[in-house]
Length: 168
Image (cartoon, rainbow, N blue to C red):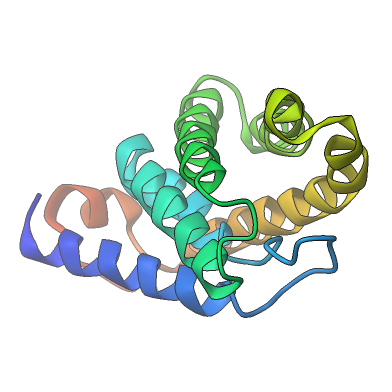
């Protein structure tokens, strides 16, 4: 990874930290716009980079709230990173709509269901709706930003060289 790409990745992590302060209503307060930069990073820079931003973004959002679920936030952060990988690969194989719907369901329902053994069914019922809405907002925002950027800059050159040329 060259320096320019590393700086762009750090910028995305910083945007995740800012997004952590834009909170959507939920019982534990960790549903925020911290994931949009991670999903955008998956689209722009690939699965691993997006996964890193999603992992760190969730930890920053949880840190801001005082880690209300304790160490389970590490598991959630890993699962969020997995969502970034899934988002990238499904997007590359299909399109933005299918990948978005899949990852919204993966983040909002599947990950929450995986936490039932640790946090109980009541947690699942209380969090599934806010997480579906939060996932949808984050992923739609990332998709829209990706489309805007793709129309204005050469994303292939960005990925290849780490430099940006603005299209006329």
